[in-house]
Amino acid sequence: MKTIHDIRRSNARKLRDGVGGNSSFATMIDREPTQTSRFMGDGATKNIGDSMARHIEKCFDLPIGWLDQEHQTTNITKKPDVSITNKQITLVPVISWVQAGAWKEVGYSEVDLSTAETYPCPVPCGEMTYILRVIGDSMIDEYRPGDMIFVDPEVPACHGDDVIALMHDTGETTFKRLIEDGTQRYLKALHPNWPEPYIKINGNCSIIGTVIFSGKPRRYKIKA
Image (tube, rainbow, N blue to C red; front, side):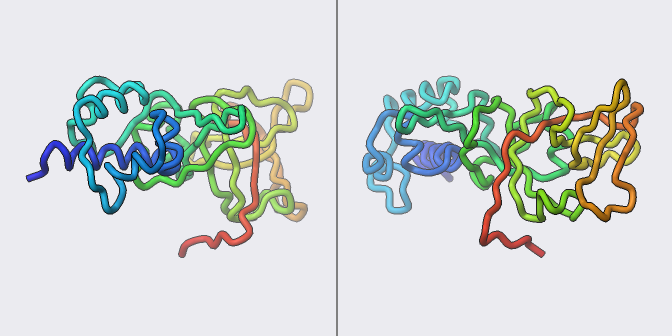
């Protein structure tokens, strides 16, 4: 049977992983990384006492006693910002294309922060921003499979923006460029040889996010 010290340590580790590691966690609670390592590192030598537990909960905007209860997933309602050299860095999770389809409704309740990949967003972003890894060839040459796109659902899409759209007939999400021609809107594939590059928007889809940044990992390999 787990003791309260085991439960607190497990929850603290989930919070640590959710904000990107021990250094970020230590910054969040205004402590030194060496101190936090002592109570939640692999070879922890100290327990998390009552006062420290309440302090951690306060820093993460969690209810009193949250650290003392077991949680299958960790839902942080306030996105942690880590201040480094006077710049606000927001860590955002990598999610699946299936999760993206319902992200506005479920958000972080569907993400296990103890296992999720998180990366700092290089540009200002909203609290619901997430990362997708590009799949397929429809947006070549500008985007290639494995590229990381940072998507903000709170940014209104305009002509020329690259967007994530939810197709109503299939329930699938797609990544295309938004084109506006007068009153008509289209989704455009950027691949120069794509067989049907334009999808006319006529109530058949909803734009659910706007790409605000993209990056190209040089050693990333798509898992089989």
